[in-house]
Image 1 (cartoon, rainbow, N blue to C red):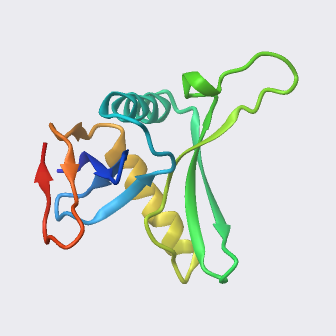
Image 2 (image 1 turned 45 degrees about the vertical axis):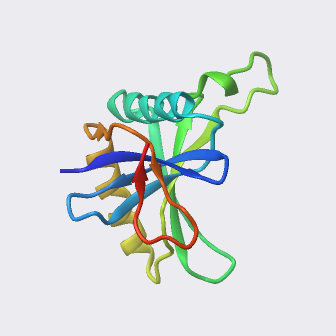
Amino acid sequence: MARYQCFRTADRVGWRLLAGNNRILGVAVREHGGLAPAVEEIAAVQDALRADTARVTVDRTDTGQWRWSLIGDGCLPQRRTAGPRADPDVVLARSPQRFARRVDARHAALRFAAAAATAAVEPGLAVFEPGRRGRVVA
């Protein structure tokens, strides 16, 4: 069963979606100052997927490989602005790796979207320390 894991690197907090076999299905684009904003962003991703307001784009990178992005339509509260300069397209998540074929990137995005809408958030904050194998849950 898929689950979200929030983790800390240096002084920032991010999240990732892990499959039942612990493979990374997708990662956050932004890093946050604490756990609460990361969990709020996860809720925004889930809301966008459930409301069908998110879309997947697959783009070629500068190395010639493919990467998917989950785009939300004004889903994050801090990005909502009024007026003609509003940028409704917010990247909510991205593929954790690049793919040699576009079809593989598209299938990976569909796996992410299917799992992300209903995945639970793992309690605690995983901390990955340099020079230490494994993680500590705070």
